[in-house]
Length: 438
Ligand code: GLY
Ligand code: MN
Ligand code: MN
Image 1: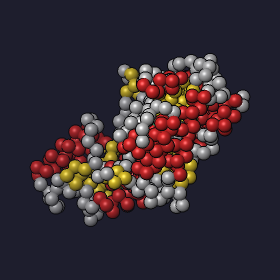
Image 2: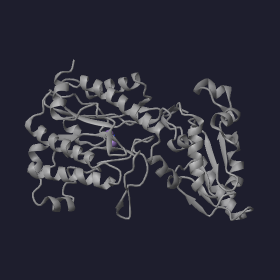
Image 3: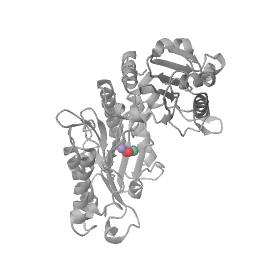
Image 4: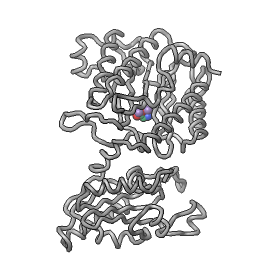
């Protein structure tokens, strides 16, 4: 349960039940994915299942029953010495009941036979479609059966709803234990970037920088990177999710490093763009300066009551002014913002929620109204400018330059706290760090 007390998960389940009404929520574990033939990807537990139960074992299915007699039912793999020889200790139903505070726990093999009765008791089933696996087949079959028979105690289920309808907003507002984990993830991510910086130099492989970062992540208590580490040198900095990391860094390159540690299932997410030779050239400096000012402007817009859209707009205003000053765009800044003329150079959003998932769920806007920020929300601020080779037009002289700067911020009662400020972003500090690396 990643060091969290059972009461934390019980509290989250109680909050869920308070809005679940007579619904039933079914949360399966993440599937085990094959990497190649019979070799598995490293297992990553499902964020929603963990958030409500603390369970991390593959094969687990949690069923949360609303109604007048709320119940928390677990299905887990049975103990199996042969399987445990290969993949390690399983808890089994009895131990799971105690560990996770379940009202009942059954072997996974009983899921199919028990689901129709469990789902038949609710009026709505909260389950995410799209898994296209056995659990989804069982839920849909159980739902069809419960509908066909009609409800014996009420109406029976009539609606299938995404669990995110309830859980996304709960997860958006981080509790103290989550903030503490996000602080740790941010600190370990900074430690990784510090080691990465030491490995950046002309003649080093992008892979060597990746290796230095990920070694530091592991040495500082992370389970590993939360997403594929990006080390994009030269023109690779313009590929937003470049993860090949197979190019040799050259003299005069910028190196865009986007890497984040996963600590106790929570994520850090930092990007820094470093001059390989220790100094930005004039063109690189002019682009970096715009992006860094956009980052500062976006951060200054963060406070309770502001919107996530206003954070993005603050960054875009600085980026567009900068694109005009760089001679890439021409015209009135307001018009250029409205027409999204900046999109070829800034194609992504400025922020995403951060938590158990690197891109945590929760809506950013409804019907054109942007989400209002509240203390306890955590998200990234990551403006960038990318002039990919061949983009042409008025950006020709900047082709091959890609810059992104990304920090993780916590909304506080009075404003904003950067969780990742320990790794500087200012040009002179970046140059001093790269120039002074050992
Ligand atoms: N590394 C993915 C992101 O920054 O969103
Ligand atoms: Mn990010
Ligand atoms: Mn990132």
